[in-house]
Image (cartoon, rainbow, N blue to C red; front, side, top):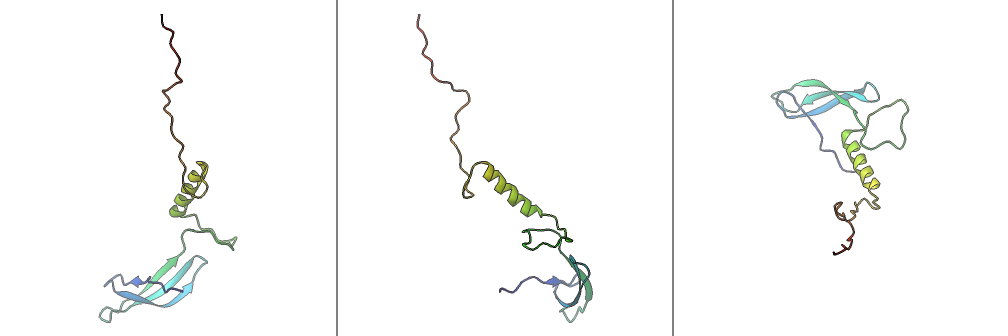
Length: 112
């Protein structure tokens, strides 16, 4: 498994801060106690980590947890639906040739 490159920055000196401890407040919210790694700064602060939206739905959802679908996921779903509605098979849109609406079948004119 790949290690995460995510970290918290000190709001004062903007160096990396280490999470010293954390406490689960709710199923969606965790409180973090962070400490700046810059010895000249030494700032210790509280931060919150919150789950705010769903990108991909859970295979084992908790009935008491509600996370709205993210804008990113909605855009993906909408894009897939519009492609499906156009009659696509493998996610590749097919385009039918367009016929001009102003053309009509040739009708022979009677000459006088």
